[in-house]
Amino acid sequence: MLDRRTSRLLAGATGAGVGFGAALLLGRSPLAVLVCAGFAGIVAVASVVDLQERRIPNRLTYPGSLAAIAIAGPLGPAALGQALGGLLLAGGMMSAMWYLSRGRLGLGDVKLSAMVGGFLGGAHVPIYLVAGTGLGAIAGLLLLASGRDRRSTFALGPFLSMGALLVMLFAGPVAGQ
Image: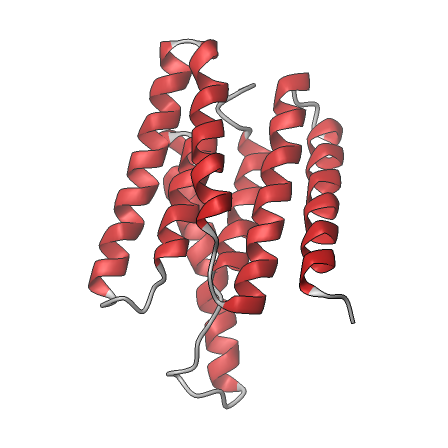
């Protein structure tokens, strides 16, 4: 069995490779291919950490959010507005869900979603949230059907990440649309 550090490095490298290859095959621009690779690496590491520790580290989501804004900024006001709007929309919607869940949804999931929104832009946030939370809901129902206690902890981050990566690859990032 791999130690935690090695499994995270392997997840990041694999995610980046998959993101790079998929974006390249889908004919994305060179900038979009690089953004997809970095993004896939970040969400892969976030997923592994969430599965291992039931948390998503700020050291991934904060720099990731800043990177989304920094990449969009030089592309002009429209791209910057999309990135900021996506960050605020996804973060705001997930913050409302956190509040309504009385803290059962983790703040790491909220910050991960805000970062994802920054990369995808406001126009793609609704489909991301439907995809990510839908995948998580299906997994949760399957766990309940298998006899798992409904009060057990559940890592939503991997499912949010899968939804984010699907939207990223098919809709493209703000940078390179």
